[in-house]
Image (cartoon, rainbow, N blue to C red; front, side, top):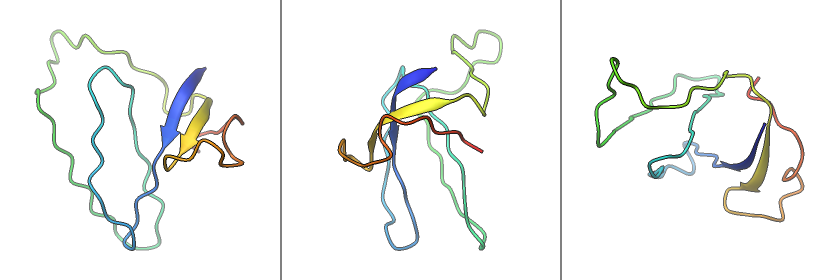
Length: 83
C-alpha cells in the first residue's frame, strides 16, 4: 500500500503542466465523456532491457496525503482505488 500519494486533477477548465520528479511512482486515469488528449514527455527513454523501475498493479489501493496540493481535503487519508 502506498501512503504518500498526491492526486492532481486536470481538466479542460484547468489545463496545466504537471511535472513528476524522478524516483516517484506515477500513473494517470482519464475520466471523460469526450476524447482526452494527454501529452506525455520524458527526459530519459525507458530501457526495456534494464528497466530499473518498480511496477505496481494498476488497481493497487493507495491512500492520498494531498489532493490538488491540499492536505486538508476530506478524501485525504482514506483508501482510494484507481478503478
